[in-house]
Every structure is written in structure tokens, then in C-alpha cells.
Picture 1 (cartoon, rainbow, N blue to C red):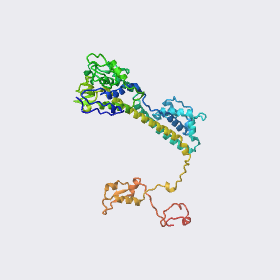
Picture 2 (picture 1 turned 30 degrees about the vertical axis):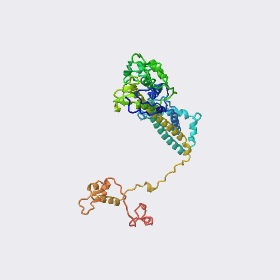
Picture 3 (picture 1 turned 120 degrees about the horizontal axis):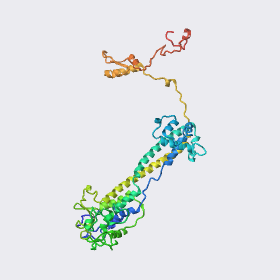
Picture 4 (picture 1 turned 90 degrees about the vertical axis):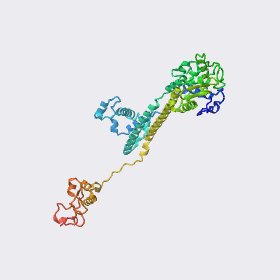
Length: 491
């Protein structure tokens, strides 16, 4: 019986348009040609897998140079402290060196200390100061500009260190998958779990090979991509169909279900017919396209899955029955798919890990570029800071230094806003609720309470006219106190 539809294949090449299984009375020559090319690509992957891309740029130099700039823009008194310092100092010695207690030394002291000591050795002597420090030209800045330079450099260093921390966390994810691990997993998916080299061995490619094609070409026995390829492409000894994977396939060695001891030679010849490919990094996009092709090529007939062509639900290798691998219990329910083609499951899992690895690598590279950009910007600050003018001293008037306190009148007005609630009224430090008051103004200003509660109140003392009294006449003779400069009431 023929399935109602041809495989749904997500094509990655023109092969999808050329090799479409024919719909005929029997399995015909080249009906499995598309599967041959898909499986060949997967089997060959372990041999062509190149090194995976890595986050090539290491911003360690940029961070070291930021440490150096931060150190050289620090006050000279601070830098001079490192004349006798050594990178080998332990926490206690570092604390003693700066007259501190060990508990006062923060948790990241060791990394900072190493950078400080190294920076002093690099920059302590003008004769040996690195050119990039000289190019920063901060020595020519005015004192206030140098101070601004140091502040900005310290901020830049803190930001760079935070980005580096993020980068190292991301890198741990990117480095979780090595090139060798990828090759090993591709090899096992291609040639079997016990395979150690890319050579077809029947006992490793199949699990429990028993020569009978019908039982051997099932999900529990054809447990590698190479075994699946053998089931779909080795010609039956009855010569029908001839060359199921294409008329150019080798057919000197065929599969005899009655007496076939192993398929080493027949499958080996078949694998030699796989197209050659250049060595390249295996990417999630490349591997994902092929695994998706294979997954979508599985057809479901009567609650079983089939990879390859079948006429009656069997995979005996003949034109009248089928040249295929049968996946028992592989239904339209996706939960039945896992484990039916374990090698494909493993490659799909590897695809996801490759994708995560690629994303982490790209993110790590982005963070590294940001750190380098921070270094470059910070080293160019001197040109900008030369335009920074010195801060002017601020003159403070008497009015600015005199505390401004509310007047009794304003406090009285505020109390009157709380007549409706005794709780609100009494909660104020300068109000008292008078329940006996007959009018609706029961919340009154209480100067005694205000004084007890420490509320400062501006007291207005009137003199002649509208002037407030002063002590300008205090201690002066009565005659002088009658001058126009004195406004003493009654004089």
C-alpha cells in the first residue's frame, strides 16, 4: 500500500526538487534517493566537522590598561604607597600596609591588589611608562581636570569589570560544548553508540543485527544513521527494486536475508558513494536543516512511522513490500516520537546545544567589544576635559545661612485646617484640640506645646513703626540711643 502523500521535506538544496519518491505499484529504482543524500550528510558530518567558532577577542588587555590609567590618575600620595608593595602580600599584610584591620579589606582585594602593584611597576618610573599611558596625556591636565579624569576612569573601570564578569558567565555556557564533543556525538549518531572511528561495523551500527531485513530494519535495531542508510539503500539479493537509492549506487554486494552474516562490505561500498564535502564548522543552522528534513520525511501509516518507501507496511527490502525502516508505535502524537529514532533525537538535541553555544559566543564577543570601546573612550578623555573650567567658590549670604522657620501665624493657620478631626489636630506638634470651643474653630495653635516639642518659630518683635527691634543700642549711653540709628521703643 502506498501512503496518501509524499514526504514533507524542508529542502536545503535542489535535491528536494529532483529526488521525490515515485508513486507506483511497487518501490522503484531511486525512490529512496532523497533519503540517501540526507543520511549521507549526517554520516559524513563527523569527518568534516571543523573547530566551532569561539569568542576570539579577549578584553583582558583592555581591562589591564584601564587599571593602569585608573592608578596613574590617582593622587600621588596613593601611588607612592606602592613603592615597597609586593604582589605576594596576603590579606593580613595588605591590611597592615594600609593601617587597616583584615576585616576592612573587601572581598575582591586580591584581584585589585595585583593590578595596583602591576600598575605601579609599569608606571612608577617615567622612563618605563608604557606609551599608551603617555598617549592618554592626563599629566598635562589642570588639578581639577585630573580629578575629573580619575573619577571618570574609576567609573569606566567599574563598568568594564562588571561587563567582564557577565562575559565570563556567558563564556562558561559557550565553552560547555567543545569541538571534540561535537565530533564524538556526530560519530556515535552516524555509526552507533560504540563506534570509535568513522567506519561501518554491522555490530556497532545495528543493535542486535540478525540478518533478516524485516526485523533488523526497525527502530529498535537500526540505531544509527549508517544502519538506516543501509536499510534504505542496499539492494536486495532478488534485485527488486534495482538500486533503491539511485541508478549510480554500487550493487555488487547485496542483502540476502537468509544468509547475510554482516553488512560491512555492502554498507561500506554504499558510504563511499556519499558525496564528498569540505571540512567546515558544524553549525546549528546546517545540522538543524538536515535533521528537520529527516524528521519531516517520516510518514505515519496505521500508527507506525516509516522512513523510506513501503507498499504494505513491511520493510523486507523488496519492491512489492518496502525498502524502509519501520518505527513501531510512531503516531501523530508527538509524545510517541522520542526514542523511536534515537540517533535523530541525539542530533536534534545537539542542534539546540549548538544554537545555545553560538548565541553565547556572539554575546561574549559583544561584551568584549563593549569593554574595548570603554577603554578607547576613557583613554581619549583628556582632550575633552581640557575644556573643563575650574569650579568657582560659592559665596554664601547671611540670608542663605539663616534657618527659615515658620511663623506663629502660619502655624495657627495650619492648625485651623484640622478642626474636623481631633486626632489630626492633636497629632501636630503645635496644635491642641479644644472640645469646649463653641465655634467650629476647635483646633488651636499652642505655643507651649510647640516649645516643648522643639518646634522653631520665628518671633516678630516690633519697634518703632514697622521695624523690628535690634541690639544696636545695647550698652550705649541714653544720648546715643536717641540717634536716628536707634529704634528703641520709648527712647
